[in-house]
Length: 176
Length: 227
Image (cartoon, rainbow over all chains, first blue to last red; front, side, top):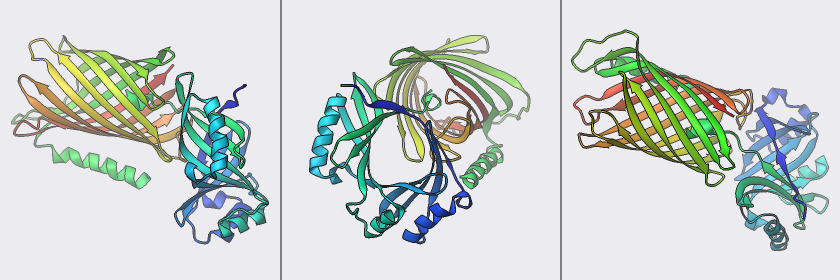
Protein backbone atom coordinates (compact mmCIF):
# COMPACT_ATOMS: atom_id res chain seq x y z
CA UNK A 1 0.00 0.00 0.00
CA UNK A 2 1.45 3.39 -0.91
CA UNK A 3 2.04 5.66 2.03
CA UNK A 4 -0.06 8.80 2.31
CA UNK A 5 2.55 10.48 4.47
CA UNK A 6 3.83 13.77 3.21
CA UNK A 7 5.93 16.38 4.90
CA UNK A 8 4.06 19.32 6.40
CA UNK A 9 5.77 22.63 7.02
CA UNK A 10 4.13 25.78 8.25
CA UNK A 11 5.21 29.25 9.22
CA UNK A 12 2.98 31.09 11.59
CA UNK A 13 3.02 34.51 13.18
CA UNK A 14 0.89 36.70 15.43
CA UNK A 15 -1.53 39.11 13.77
CA UNK A 16 -2.84 42.22 15.51
CA UNK A 17 -6.67 42.23 15.78
CA UNK A 18 -6.69 45.47 13.79
CA UNK A 19 -5.06 43.67 10.84
CA UNK A 20 -7.65 40.87 10.74
CA UNK A 21 -10.22 41.08 7.88
CA UNK A 22 -13.53 42.45 9.16
CA UNK A 23 -15.44 39.41 7.85
CA UNK A 24 -13.34 37.10 10.04
CA UNK A 25 -13.67 39.30 13.14
CA UNK A 26 -17.45 39.56 12.64
CA UNK A 27 -17.83 35.78 12.27
CA UNK A 28 -16.27 35.29 15.71
CA UNK A 29 -18.00 38.29 17.33
CA UNK A 30 -21.43 37.06 16.18
CA UNK A 31 -21.00 33.74 17.98
CA UNK A 32 -18.53 34.30 20.80
CA UNK A 33 -19.15 37.72 22.28
CA UNK A 34 -16.35 38.91 24.54
CA UNK A 35 -14.04 35.96 23.90
CA UNK A 36 -10.32 36.77 24.00
CA UNK A 37 -9.05 35.82 20.55
CA UNK A 38 -5.45 35.15 19.54
CA UNK A 39 -5.01 35.74 15.82
CA UNK A 40 -2.31 34.01 13.79
CA UNK A 41 -1.28 34.04 10.16
CA UNK A 42 -0.21 30.66 8.77
CA UNK A 43 1.73 29.96 5.62
CA UNK A 44 2.18 26.46 4.31
CA UNK A 45 3.81 25.46 1.05
CA UNK A 46 0.41 25.65 -0.66
CA UNK A 47 -1.65 28.33 1.04
CA UNK A 48 -1.94 31.30 3.36
CA UNK A 49 -4.61 31.38 6.07
CA UNK A 50 -5.68 33.33 9.13
CA UNK A 51 -6.46 31.47 12.32
CA UNK A 52 -8.37 32.52 15.41
CA UNK A 53 -7.58 30.57 18.58
CA UNK A 54 -9.52 30.90 21.79
CA UNK A 55 -11.06 29.08 24.71
CA UNK A 56 -14.71 29.45 25.66
CA UNK A 57 -16.50 27.50 28.40
CA UNK A 58 -13.61 25.06 28.68
CA UNK A 59 -13.57 24.29 24.95
CA UNK A 60 -10.58 25.16 22.76
CA UNK A 61 -11.51 26.46 19.32
CA UNK A 62 -9.39 27.08 16.28
CA UNK A 63 -11.19 28.75 13.37
CA UNK A 64 -9.49 29.11 10.02
CA UNK A 65 -10.19 31.83 7.45
CA UNK A 66 -8.84 32.57 3.98
CA UNK A 67 -6.93 35.87 3.53
CA UNK A 68 -10.20 37.66 2.61
CA UNK A 69 -11.83 36.58 5.89
CA UNK A 70 -14.07 33.79 4.54
CA UNK A 71 -14.36 30.97 7.07
CA UNK A 72 -12.68 27.73 5.98
CA UNK A 73 -13.23 25.39 8.89
CA UNK A 74 -13.74 25.15 12.62
CA UNK A 75 -11.67 22.87 14.81
CA UNK A 76 -12.64 21.97 18.36
CA UNK A 77 -10.22 20.24 20.72
CA UNK A 78 -11.54 16.86 21.76
CA UNK A 79 -10.20 13.46 22.81
CA UNK A 80 -9.68 10.28 20.82
CA UNK A 81 -12.20 8.45 23.00
CA UNK A 82 -14.85 11.08 22.17
CA UNK A 83 -14.79 9.93 18.52
CA UNK A 84 -17.64 7.47 17.77
CA UNK A 85 -16.49 3.91 18.40
CA UNK A 86 -17.20 2.73 14.79
CA UNK A 87 -15.05 5.59 13.43
CA UNK A 88 -12.30 4.80 15.91
CA UNK A 89 -12.33 1.13 14.94
CA UNK A 90 -11.98 1.86 11.19
CA UNK A 91 -9.31 4.50 11.81
CA UNK A 92 -7.32 2.38 14.27
CA UNK A 93 -7.29 -0.52 11.82
CA UNK A 94 -5.99 1.78 9.07
CA UNK A 95 -3.34 3.39 11.32
CA UNK A 96 -2.16 -0.02 12.48
CA UNK A 97 -1.45 -0.82 8.83
CA UNK A 98 0.38 2.49 8.30
CA UNK A 99 2.49 2.46 11.49
CA UNK A 100 4.25 -0.13 13.60
CA UNK A 101 2.78 1.60 16.65
CA UNK A 102 1.13 4.90 17.37
CA UNK A 103 -0.17 7.08 20.16
CA UNK A 104 -2.74 9.85 19.71
CA UNK A 105 -1.44 13.00 21.36
CA UNK A 106 -4.05 15.49 20.15
CA UNK A 107 -7.54 15.19 18.68
CA UNK A 108 -9.62 17.89 17.03
CA UNK A 109 -13.08 17.70 15.49
CA UNK A 110 -13.18 19.60 12.21
CA UNK A 111 -16.38 21.16 10.87
CA UNK A 112 -16.75 22.47 7.33
CA UNK A 113 -19.88 24.17 5.99
CA UNK A 114 -21.24 27.49 4.82
CA UNK A 115 -20.70 30.43 7.12
CA UNK A 116 -24.24 30.64 8.51
CA UNK A 117 -24.50 26.88 9.08
CA UNK A 118 -21.17 26.88 10.91
CA UNK A 119 -22.31 29.76 13.10
CA UNK A 120 -25.53 27.89 13.96
CA UNK A 121 -23.56 24.74 14.73
CA UNK A 122 -21.21 26.66 17.02
CA UNK A 123 -24.12 28.22 18.91
CA UNK A 124 -25.90 24.85 19.22
CA UNK A 125 -22.57 23.10 20.02
CA UNK A 126 -23.56 20.28 17.69
CA UNK A 127 -23.08 19.68 13.99
CA UNK A 128 -26.21 19.23 11.82
CA UNK A 129 -26.07 16.83 8.86
CA UNK A 130 -25.17 19.65 6.47
CA UNK A 131 -21.83 20.09 8.25
CA UNK A 132 -18.94 17.99 6.97
CA UNK A 133 -17.37 16.42 10.05
CA UNK A 134 -13.79 15.22 9.99
CA UNK A 135 -11.23 14.41 12.66
CA UNK A 136 -7.70 15.76 12.83
CA UNK A 137 -5.26 13.83 14.97
CA UNK A 138 -1.66 14.39 15.96
CA UNK A 139 0.11 11.09 16.38
CA UNK A 140 3.42 10.07 17.81
CA UNK A 141 4.03 7.07 15.62
CA UNK A 142 6.78 4.65 14.62
CA UNK A 143 7.43 3.38 11.14
CA UNK A 144 10.40 1.12 10.38
CA UNK A 145 11.65 1.83 13.92
CA UNK A 146 11.73 5.60 13.37
CA UNK A 147 9.39 7.67 15.50
CA UNK A 148 7.92 10.95 14.32
CA UNK A 149 4.92 13.15 14.82
CA UNK A 150 2.19 12.94 12.15
CA UNK A 151 -0.96 14.89 11.39
CA UNK A 152 -3.79 12.63 10.30
CA UNK A 153 -7.06 13.84 8.78
CA UNK A 154 -9.90 11.36 8.53
CA UNK A 155 -13.53 11.33 7.47
CA UNK A 156 -16.45 10.80 9.84
CA UNK A 157 -16.41 7.18 8.64
CA UNK A 158 -12.80 6.74 9.77
CA UNK A 159 -11.43 6.68 6.22
CA UNK A 160 -8.06 8.44 6.12
CA UNK A 161 -7.88 11.57 3.96
CA UNK A 162 -4.24 12.49 4.51
CA UNK A 163 -1.20 11.80 6.66
CA UNK A 164 1.51 14.43 6.96
CA UNK A 165 4.76 14.04 8.80
CA UNK A 166 5.32 17.06 11.04
CA UNK A 167 8.83 18.37 10.65
CA UNK A 168 10.50 18.76 14.02
CA UNK A 169 12.19 22.06 14.77
CA UNK A 170 15.91 22.02 15.39
CA UNK A 171 16.48 21.99 19.14
CA UNK A 172 20.25 21.44 19.21
CA UNK A 173 20.65 24.69 21.16
CA UNK A 174 18.55 23.19 23.98
CA UNK A 175 20.33 19.85 23.99
CA UNK A 176 24.01 20.85 24.02
CA UNK B 1 6.58 38.71 27.07
CA UNK B 2 8.56 41.97 26.63
CA UNK B 3 7.86 43.35 30.15
CA UNK B 4 8.94 39.98 31.60
CA UNK B 5 12.13 40.13 29.56
CA UNK B 6 12.92 43.66 30.73
CA UNK B 7 12.16 42.71 34.35
CA UNK B 8 14.53 39.74 34.13
CA UNK B 9 17.32 41.89 32.64
CA UNK B 10 16.85 44.44 35.43
CA UNK B 11 17.04 41.60 37.95
CA UNK B 12 20.34 40.50 36.45
CA UNK B 13 21.69 44.04 36.52
CA UNK B 14 20.50 44.36 40.11
CA UNK B 15 22.65 41.40 41.05
CA UNK B 16 25.85 43.31 40.23
CA UNK B 17 25.81 45.65 43.22
CA UNK B 18 24.23 42.91 45.34
CA UNK B 19 27.35 40.77 45.25
CA UNK B 20 29.97 43.49 44.88
CA UNK B 21 31.19 42.86 48.45
CA UNK B 22 31.58 39.13 47.91
CA UNK B 23 33.70 36.83 45.83
CA UNK B 24 32.72 37.37 42.24
CA UNK B 25 33.67 37.12 38.61
CA UNK B 26 32.21 39.01 35.64
CA UNK B 27 33.02 38.54 32.04
CA UNK B 28 32.03 37.16 28.69
CA UNK B 29 31.27 33.61 27.72
CA UNK B 30 31.57 32.97 24.00
CA UNK B 31 30.47 29.73 22.41
CA UNK B 32 30.59 28.21 18.95
CA UNK B 33 28.44 25.12 18.69
CA UNK B 34 28.53 22.97 15.56
CA UNK B 35 26.37 19.87 15.20
CA UNK B 36 26.67 17.45 12.33
CA UNK B 37 24.87 14.21 11.56
CA UNK B 38 27.17 11.18 11.54
CA UNK B 39 24.64 8.42 10.91
CA UNK B 40 20.87 8.00 10.72
CA UNK B 41 20.28 8.40 14.45
CA UNK B 42 23.59 9.94 15.54
CA UNK B 43 24.78 13.53 15.81
CA UNK B 44 28.17 14.87 16.77
CA UNK B 45 28.26 18.16 18.60
CA UNK B 46 31.45 20.19 18.77
CA UNK B 47 31.50 23.05 21.22
CA UNK B 48 34.25 25.62 21.51
CA UNK B 49 33.76 27.87 24.49
CA UNK B 50 36.03 30.47 26.03
CA UNK B 51 35.78 32.76 29.03
CA UNK B 52 37.15 36.26 29.29
CA UNK B 53 37.09 38.04 32.64
CA UNK B 54 36.57 41.76 33.01
CA UNK B 55 36.21 42.06 36.78
CA UNK B 56 36.87 39.72 39.68
CA UNK B 57 37.27 39.70 43.41
CA UNK B 58 38.43 37.08 45.87
CA UNK B 59 37.12 37.09 49.42
CA UNK B 60 38.91 39.71 51.58
CA UNK B 61 40.88 40.94 48.61
CA UNK B 62 40.70 44.07 46.52
CA UNK B 63 38.63 43.83 43.34
CA UNK B 64 40.41 43.99 40.02
CA UNK B 65 38.80 45.41 36.93
CA UNK B 66 41.18 44.15 34.31
CA UNK B 67 40.63 42.13 31.17
CA UNK B 68 42.00 38.61 31.43
CA UNK B 69 41.56 35.60 29.17
CA UNK B 70 40.71 32.68 31.44
CA UNK B 71 40.22 29.45 29.54
CA UNK B 72 39.03 27.62 26.45
CA UNK B 73 37.01 24.39 26.33
CA UNK B 74 36.67 22.07 23.39
CA UNK B 75 33.93 19.49 23.83
CA UNK B 76 32.82 16.66 21.57
CA UNK B 77 29.52 14.97 22.36
CA UNK B 78 28.02 12.15 20.30
CA UNK B 79 24.27 11.74 20.78
CA UNK B 80 21.91 9.02 19.64
CA UNK B 81 18.24 9.73 19.09
CA UNK B 82 16.34 7.24 21.22
CA UNK B 83 12.82 8.46 20.43
CA UNK B 84 11.39 11.53 18.76
CA UNK B 85 11.76 13.38 22.10
CA UNK B 86 14.80 11.80 23.72
CA UNK B 87 18.52 11.56 23.06
CA UNK B 88 21.35 9.84 24.88
CA UNK B 89 24.92 10.98 24.49
CA UNK B 90 28.48 10.73 25.64
CA UNK B 91 31.54 12.84 25.07
CA UNK B 92 34.83 14.33 26.07
CA UNK B 93 35.91 17.85 26.99
CA UNK B 94 39.41 19.23 26.90
CA UNK B 95 40.05 22.45 28.81
CA UNK B 96 43.09 24.67 28.47
CA UNK B 97 43.62 26.94 31.46
CA UNK B 98 46.88 28.38 32.78
CA UNK B 99 48.80 26.22 30.27
CA UNK B 100 47.36 23.08 31.84
CA UNK B 101 44.92 20.63 30.35
CA UNK B 102 41.84 19.37 32.17
CA UNK B 103 39.98 16.30 30.91
CA UNK B 104 36.29 15.62 31.36
CA UNK B 105 34.09 12.67 30.42
CA UNK B 106 30.45 13.50 29.74
CA UNK B 107 27.26 11.42 29.72
CA UNK B 108 23.95 13.08 28.96
CA UNK B 109 20.24 12.41 28.50
CA UNK B 110 17.78 14.86 26.97
CA UNK B 111 14.03 15.05 26.79
CA UNK B 112 12.64 17.78 24.55
CA UNK B 113 8.92 18.42 24.31
CA UNK B 114 7.31 20.98 22.00
CA UNK B 115 4.17 22.27 23.68
CA UNK B 116 1.60 24.62 22.14
CA UNK B 117 3.46 27.82 22.99
CA UNK B 118 6.91 26.81 24.26
CA UNK B 119 9.57 24.16 23.84
CA UNK B 120 10.60 22.52 27.10
CA UNK B 121 13.92 20.71 27.36
CA UNK B 122 15.20 18.63 30.23
CA UNK B 123 18.88 17.70 30.30
CA UNK B 124 20.52 15.37 32.79
CA UNK B 125 24.31 15.18 32.68
CA UNK B 126 26.90 13.34 34.68
CA UNK B 127 30.54 14.21 34.16
CA UNK B 128 33.89 13.28 35.61
CA UNK B 129 36.72 15.82 35.62
CA UNK B 130 40.40 15.01 35.85
CA UNK B 131 42.82 17.85 36.52
CA UNK B 132 46.57 17.60 37.29
CA UNK B 133 47.26 17.90 41.01
CA UNK B 134 43.58 17.85 42.01
CA UNK B 135 41.24 15.04 43.06
CA UNK B 136 38.85 13.73 40.44
CA UNK B 137 35.51 15.52 40.49
CA UNK B 138 32.10 14.07 39.69
CA UNK B 139 29.12 16.26 38.87
CA UNK B 140 25.42 15.51 38.46
CA UNK B 141 23.63 18.23 36.52
CA UNK B 142 19.99 18.91 35.71
CA UNK B 143 18.99 21.70 33.36
CA UNK B 144 15.52 22.89 32.50
CA UNK B 145 15.44 24.87 29.27
CA UNK B 146 12.53 26.82 27.83
CA UNK B 147 12.28 28.50 24.47
CA UNK B 148 9.50 30.69 23.14
CA UNK B 149 8.96 32.50 19.88
CA UNK B 150 8.58 36.25 20.17
CA UNK B 151 6.11 36.23 17.30
CA UNK B 152 3.51 33.48 17.14
CA UNK B 153 3.58 30.06 18.71
CA UNK B 154 6.57 28.45 17.03
CA UNK B 155 10.08 29.59 16.18
CA UNK B 156 10.20 29.88 12.42
CA UNK B 157 13.18 30.83 10.26
CA UNK B 158 14.11 34.52 10.46
CA UNK B 159 12.32 34.88 13.80
CA UNK B 160 13.49 35.92 17.22
CA UNK B 161 12.94 33.95 20.37
CA UNK B 162 13.69 34.03 24.04
CA UNK B 163 15.44 31.19 25.87
CA UNK B 164 15.65 30.58 29.60
CA UNK B 165 17.83 27.95 31.27
CA UNK B 166 17.97 26.96 34.91
CA UNK B 167 20.59 24.42 35.93
CA UNK B 168 21.53 22.72 39.19
CA UNK B 169 24.91 21.04 39.59
CA UNK B 170 25.87 18.75 42.45
CA UNK B 171 29.67 18.53 42.72
CA UNK B 172 31.56 15.80 44.56
CA UNK B 173 35.25 15.06 45.04
CA UNK B 174 37.42 13.60 47.80
CA UNK B 175 38.20 17.13 48.93
CA UNK B 176 34.82 18.79 48.81
CA UNK B 177 31.09 18.69 48.04
CA UNK B 178 29.40 21.70 46.52
CA UNK B 179 26.34 22.93 44.66
CA UNK B 180 26.17 25.32 41.75
CA UNK B 181 23.04 27.00 40.47
CA UNK B 182 22.85 28.68 37.08
CA UNK B 183 20.20 30.82 35.45
CA UNK B 184 20.49 32.17 31.95
CA UNK B 185 18.30 34.33 29.79
CA UNK B 186 19.06 34.84 26.12
CA UNK B 187 17.53 36.53 23.15
CA UNK B 188 17.95 34.42 20.04
CA UNK B 189 17.61 34.78 16.31
CA UNK B 190 16.77 31.72 14.26
CA UNK B 191 18.15 32.57 10.85
CA UNK B 192 17.35 29.33 9.04
CA UNK B 193 16.51 26.63 11.58
CA UNK B 194 20.08 25.41 11.13
CA UNK B 195 21.74 28.61 12.35
CA UNK B 196 20.92 30.36 15.57
CA UNK B 197 22.62 33.16 17.43
CA UNK B 198 21.93 33.90 21.07
CA UNK B 199 22.89 36.88 23.20
CA UNK B 200 22.21 36.89 26.88
CA UNK B 201 23.21 36.95 30.50
CA UNK B 202 24.05 34.06 32.76
CA UNK B 203 24.28 34.13 36.52
CA UNK B 204 26.01 31.38 38.49
CA UNK B 205 26.35 30.91 42.22
CA UNK B 206 28.46 28.23 43.89
CA UNK B 207 30.74 27.52 46.87
CA UNK B 208 27.75 26.86 49.08
CA UNK B 209 30.19 24.90 51.23
CA UNK B 210 32.17 28.07 52.05
CA UNK B 211 31.34 30.92 54.42
CA UNK B 212 30.68 33.20 51.44
CA UNK B 213 29.21 32.08 48.15
CA UNK B 214 30.94 32.87 44.87
CA UNK B 215 28.97 34.70 42.22
CA UNK B 216 29.55 34.83 38.49
CA UNK B 217 27.84 37.00 35.93
CA UNK B 218 28.50 36.37 32.28
CA UNK B 219 27.46 38.17 29.15
CA UNK B 220 26.94 35.29 26.75
CA UNK B 221 27.09 34.97 23.02
CA UNK B 222 26.44 31.64 21.34
CA UNK B 223 26.41 30.61 17.73
CA UNK B 224 24.67 27.32 16.97
CA UNK B 225 25.24 25.76 13.57
CA UNK B 226 23.62 22.48 12.52
CA UNK B 227 25.01 20.99 9.35
